[in-house]
Image (cartoon, rainbow, N blue to C red; front, top):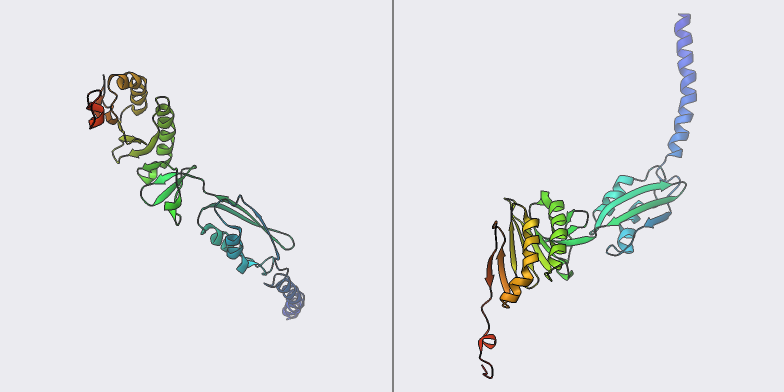
Length: 244
């Protein structure tokens, strides 16, 4: 009986001590305690506006230091167009720090999306206002391969004065490039870069033999190319001294 009394007395004493501690902690971690009032943002702000960031974060400012939802802030910022990565952290006692990285577009991907230089496919509004980007087509899982191939194809083409504007990878793994002049270069599936290198080396001689614009070059042959040239214009076929 005495043991039971001592146990009840001990529990009562523990409760008397714990309850004030819990009350103090509840006050310390309360939502309005130590409000965040400062915002520190690290970003380049080339595509994302500072006002967009402020609007996304504003609902979370003013909350207590321990109550602010960092994942909620990160999600709000990650949902903005052109945002690639977001890092959010708190700095005692009243500062919210944000590090924001924007997508850097490398090309158009398909008809309605963009490809970043890190190989990420993303969407933005008013994409038609972007100019000067090459156009890629291919399976979404092959973005890195297409980006790498374009860099190599563009470098090889530049040696012969060919500016590659489009690059496509078919579902079966066949490569096709198109220049800014509209010439289609069919590279195929096997050894596309060596085939293009061989064609680039031969192109100056081919152009000396035929000055017509090149429409299509099929490079999928072991010992040559299948070339299609544009038809000569009437002005080009007229005899010297004649007018058309």
